Length: 71
Image (cartoon, rainbow, N blue to C red; front, top):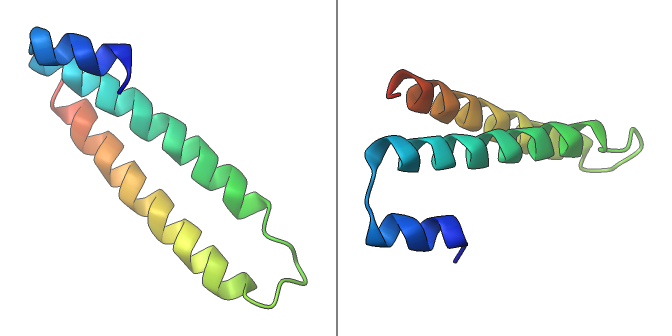
């Protein structure tokens, strides 16, 4: 558990919690995009891996948009 999560447990704050979730989602999105770029051209499961990463990117993008709208 991060120190930010511990603080939120003691002092719940919807805007602060939203910002933390937004930052986490943004970091996950960057990682998913990097993972997508790292898929090798000769990988036997290239299409499957690309679809998984694209689905993850779409879900994270939607989550980020939702969190931004809740600010």
